[in-house]
Image: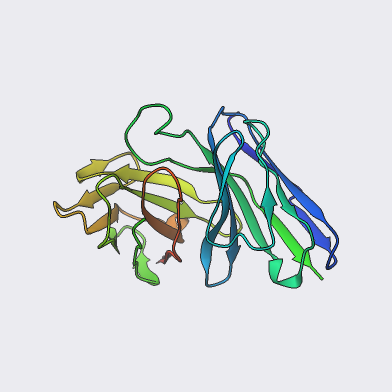
Amino acid sequence: EAQVTQNPRYLITVTGKKLTVTCSQNMNHEYMSWYRQDPGLGLRQIYYSMNVEVTDKGDVPEGYKVSRKEKRNFPLILESPSPNQTSLYFCASSTNVLARGRTGANVLTFGAGSRLTVL
Amino acid sequence: LAKTTQPISMDSYEGQEVNITCSHNNIATNDYITWYQQFPSQGPRFIIQGYKTKVTNEVASLFIPADRKSSTLSLPRVSLSDTAVYYCLATGFQKLVFGTGTRLLVSP
């Protein structure tokens, strides 16, 4: 089944304790992205990656790191989590229409979400 | 990257047609309009995408006027299960930015 898998789905941690949220997709997608969702603020993009070894900041990158060493994986790293990073996180992926010589905008497939609480 | 503006919320009843309009005044030539649906605690799900005129699929229609400064998502005969948040994006292939969306509540 084509899907984006995030782990963990739920996590409670403490301030300053490094954590990684993993994201993996099995659709051979070039494009991957991380979003956070907070009440009243919609979905905000943290980082995105157009392909392996190519990453770029979204609108709210502060406090986060990402890496894209393999096409299928795009982990989100919180080096020193703080309470304001308590949120619902979503990973998403899509084919990169530009890379495949197509027209249109990338259409995202989302993971089920990871609810993170930082105490 | 065009900023989009949508109504914060809309109410409807089962069986009615719902039209949600999105404004994207600064849409770029290469941008497409894409709509997503999100249920509570789930990731958004793609509904429909278009560039101009009208696009229809099995769940919705998308109307885009010639100037492309706005678009309208049309949901025919909504049911209770259409209660969700609907997001409009006017983007290409890089920064895919979601706004705050439109919360649609369908009542019996």
